[in-house]
Amino acid sequence: MDLRLDDKVALVTGGSKGIGMGIVRCLLAEGARVANVNRSEAEGLALEQEYAAQGKDCLFIQGDLTDVNACRNAVEKALDRFGRIDILINNAGVNDGVGLDAGPDAFLTSLQRNLIHYYAMAHYALEALKTSRGCIVNIGSKVCVTGQGGTSGYAAAKGAINGLTREWAVDLAPWGIRVNTVLPAETWTPLYERCLAEMDDPEQARADIERLIPLEHRFTTIEELADTVVFLASDRSSHTTGQILFVDGGYTHLDRKCTASGAVSEFGAAGES
Picture (cartoon, rainbow, N blue to C red):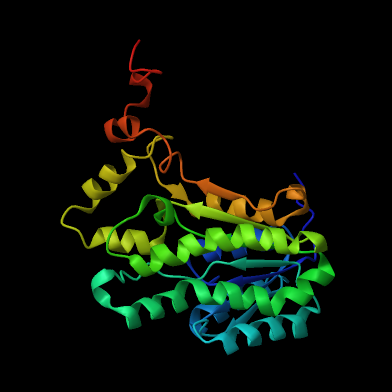
């Protein structure tokens, strides 16, 4: 399927590694031009140079998005380079473990890492998106639905992103701007791999998690998540807005008697055969 993204301009936050990099790579493969906003200069420039060698536009914009001025600067630099913005993908964030015991200052910092820049990026890109009748795709987390424990800031931010998705979809419909959110659950990223590597038995830890994922008992791949995001960002999803999509192999919503047992087929409508 041709996603009709040739020469479209996408502005992606946190696009130098993990899920963000997967999204950037998928956009570029579909012919889009990408501005990638990231803190790490080494990672961002490496990705820019990799694609420059292939004749593709992957502009790196260095910035710490906890500073709203960096958000404004990112939009301005993208417009200076490409002259337009068709797609905004808010992805940057970190599950920073700021719980109830951390205190209000730490909670506020967590919101700056995970929420405030979503609003700031959309605010500063708004006029460009109105001109292009573009779209916004936010990356959330299943934590806002399931809870996790010990991560109040991150959970609050991701819950707010769901609310903003619906709010912006209403606000921006008169300009033809679509707004959707994609929620991952257990996605196999380099960060996840490093976290498991610190456990006593990484292979068993991975197997214990995969047992809880009903569809094929495996982690979601970065590519699977990115494919959904890029589809939502394309004209092939031209009448989809205000939606919150889970790309998680059934992890979040399927009946716990299925996920806990790892044997979905054993259970019928009322546990009867």
